[in-house]
Structures are given as structure tokens and as C-alpha cells.
Length: 316
Image (tube, rainbow, N blue to C red; front, side, top):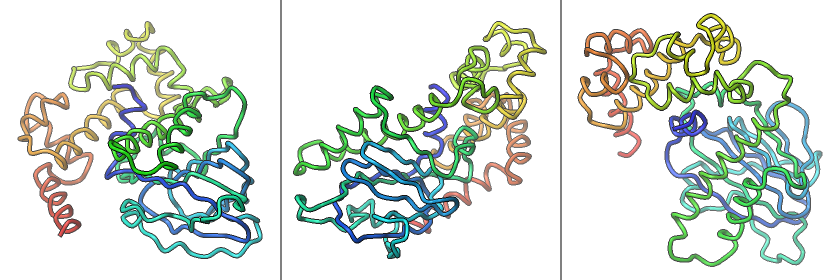
């Protein structure tokens, strides 16, 4: 898998949701902080986003706004409009309750938008996502990001028609695509002169090749030399470039990614520790357990037991 897909997959939990809403002035709502990420797409009219931090942001037709950390935010027809709290949890929204009141009189609606949310586990967030700003604004521009626009059109169509066979699967698939396209658009829009951070790392042929190699085969006994060879650089030149862009040395990132995979396998599967160790590049359970405890300050078995207890408490 590629780095962006892996970064999203390791954080995703539960099912995403979305709704299509029409509103007419006066209106203003405030969303509470949640464990996840949200988005809004303006299909008609305009509105204002009032972020938890920073100045209000004007949104127009075709604008996309992605909130990778749902710190709480407001939406309104005017930046000075008083906001009413939306007292819906993620679970309420996932069960199909609309995020915003729907104006049945479509002819008089001034604003129409798609709203949605993803549940993300930020306890082990990939740095590719943690470096994102609180608000990712993707303004509408003719000819820019056609894949993103296509996903929005398909999602809007799916939400505007009566339920049809396969609708649940179609919505989930389109929302997954939309998330990837929003992130891809953000990184593609980064200025070429920026030479640090994940946008630069994904554009750099040598660093991107090494990252793909790590994500394709994390269990392989990689060395700095073998990763440098993936990008055709010397060991020293590669190590400097990788560290300046990714924010960690090559083997430091490799270990972090292996431990991230291990934690997910312990939470979500019943694989024995020996198999988890093998999948993450460790030749013995002892070596794996020592590395895991150094990363998480707890033994793998205890981590699995605690995760199981937490899951049972949520479902019980």
C-alpha cells in the first residue's frame, strides 16, 4: 500500500457518514468537539465557517473544507450570527440523523451543502495527518482536482435520491474516496519551494521510494543503506534528506511504523505474539516485546487485554 492509504487506514475506525442539507437565513450552528474529522462542501449559495481557533472563513459554491481534528466549529449564514449547539454525537450521525436541520422548501433555500464525518483514532496518528492545519480549505477552481470534484458529484447524487440497492456500500466507498482525494488535493497544492514536511517527502523521488518500500514490506530487515538504494542515493545524502523531510531518521520511522502495525494487530486480531512479531520484522517474541514496551510502556499481552476490555465496555 502507499503511504497516504496506510496513514488513513491505520487511523480509521467505524463507518463514515454524510448528509445533504438545504438552509435559508437566518441560521447558525455550533458542532461540539468529537473524536474524528469532518468536512463540508458548498453546493449552492454561501456560508461562513467559524473555527475553534482563528478567524471566520467565507465559503462559496464548490468550496471544500476539511477539519482533520474536530475541535468544534460553527457554520452560519453570517459571521456575526449567534450559534445554536448541535447536540448530536458521532453515533447519532452514523445512525442517519442529519447534522443540520433540513429546509424542505428547496426553492427558498439559500445554501445547500454536503456535510460528513469520519471517526479517527488520534492516539496513534500518522505524522502525515498530524501536520495538517486545523482547517484545510480547498477553494473551487476551474480544472483543479477533477477526481475530488467527481467524488463530490457522485456523493451528492447518492444522497439526493431515494435509497437504492447497494446504497450503503456506495456511500461508504464514496466517503473513503473523498477523504483520500481531500488529502491528496491538499498535498498537491503545497508550494514546490517548501522542502520540508510530508508534502515535500511525497514529492521527492528518493524519499517517496523509501517510504513506499517500508510500507510495502515493513518486516524486511531494512538498513539505511538498503533504503537509500531504493532512491538511488548515498547513505549519508539519503539519511539527511529523509530526516529533514519526514522529521525522523529512516530507521526511527521504520520502527514507529512497525509498532503502529503491531498495535493494530494486537487490538483487532487474535494472532499469536509470534505471528505479530514476524509481520513487523522481529525474529523473536522477546525482541518484539522489548521494542513494543519501549514504545508503549506496556507489554504486548497487557496492551491486547486492555484494548479488549475497552472494546467490551463500549459495546456493552
